[in-house]
Image (cartoon, rainbow, N blue to C red; front, side):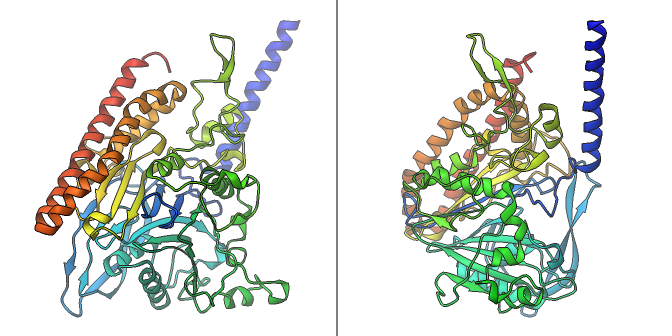
Length: 538
């Protein structure tokens, strides 16, 4: 009888689990999980020049997404005939390739600049030849703000900015002009602009359905501070009397007041509460904000559940490249918010510990199998490191070096926790063939740099507790060598700059390509080594 009762309870448990899985599958967008009400794409950390160890202004970006392109190239400076037109493209989802991707279709034209600057052509264009660098994080905002009256969307906006601007302030002014004239048809976005002097955040939302234009506010990160954006609007009160630190569109308060989202009698206007009220409720965003600030300024003892953190904080110690990498590799390990903290086993010494099979990068539809929940509900915790990162950048803009040498993009493919950053100087003229090879459109292939790391990170996640150490044994010495080489390499580059600008570009390109090739080849080899070492162990 006891056997039958236990069998009955087991069957009930199985049927209940199946029922829950079916229910979740009907209600949760696992496959194409971009939900405009809960944007989960991209984290940005920004550093003022007096907050970095060497005086760099540092920008960053994780291109987190399920459709973005997995290749990049170098676009040179160009000249155009007077009266030339630039074709404007609209982003649409496309499912006709090997994997979900995007297409960009023509929707209009605007006057072309007679001269455009060269830039590193990532999905979100990241740096131009004048060391102007861009980061980005989608926050969505109120759904009623999105307009279909206009032409400008995120990706091409970043392209036009880098083609035409030299400084962060120029980027903000040009964005304002473009959106006022041609209209913003995307969701709420935070763009971060770094030049050799300043670091700015610009938050943009649409003007409302059927309207032409945009609403925006911009706030400068103090030189000695670090800031963050993690898919939520963060700009609160705007003091336009302090023009060195704030800028905004002419309609910034009017639309909110006309729409009933702000009443002057209730207190000062706050951009984030007017245009992205859900952002301040989202633990997906707030948890990352807390984590970044807690990693750079633990002395502040910020609470992980606070609704609002300071726009920026002074770090306890000056920020290094190593610190930036550490931030972007983070998944809340050692905190109560580690998503796999309860997936434990008893090791051979009798100690209960997190199982080596515990995967902090499991896709959403695995969470119910392990009863994982968190600040983001059924999605668990939205960590900084992510399995669906396409690429990640950390940029340095440095005013004591000439532009070709001073501007550098450190780029890592796929999940940063399983990857390594390699240098792309803004003076380079080419990248390896593997960087230019489409990955998503063609499907799995060994010619793509992204696939080398997507394969590696996916494999390592299956037995993360052990395989992470194999990754660290390879990538940490290589990353340290790259950072240590920087000063001597740039000293030689500076000598070439004084003698021959073309030889300088060749020198920068050769160095960047050598390391990029080396890293990609090692990524493929490391994946093969893990398959061999852990055969039958996952």
